[in-house]
Amino acid sequence: MTASLLEQLIEALRVLPGVGQKSAQRMAYHVLERNRDGGKRLADALAAAVERIGQCSDCRDFSESEVCAICASNSRDAHLLCVVETPADRLAIEQATDYRGLYFVLHGRLSPLDGIGPRELGLDRLAGRLADGGIQEMIIATNPTVEGEATAHYLAQLARQHDVRPSRPAHGLPLGGELEYVDRGTLSHAFGSRSEVP
Image (cartoon, rainbow, N blue to C red; front, side, top):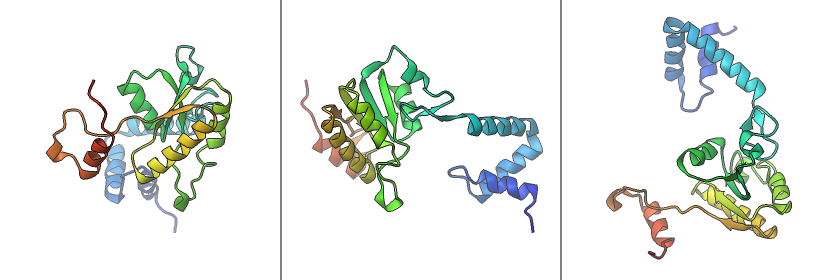
């Protein structure tokens, strides 16, 4: 028996992260009961995005053109390359820092158990960029998870093979945080990577 349109809509909404059966039902009913015009706009925007957004040929970030606006910009520092796991990580750095270099987006991290190796992360393309000789420093901004740290180690070795200085953003205590509320792993890492007070 074919699922009804309502059942198909609910199941389609479950593709979103964190959306279970009940949340998908609420969303579907909301669109159908109160906001059909919004639902049409959402459907049109989603169809256009899936159809027309691809990856930048240089950095692998999402882009509607072959080369994204950041890679095409002459105002960015082409000697600095920041490697991130996801486009969301790239956006967070752009919004929260004054970093003006270029990026490379992995779309994941090394995870042999999940079948994600260097090829899946585009590391051959990254090695090509490093071999071109213009990059002096590669900032490895992978997340401080076990897989993120393993990926960072691999990337640091790759950078050194091409005479590029690898660096890593500092991890540790949050600004405005209180020690008693910081988790043990973060506190241990912060003490292990402490630096001299200027």
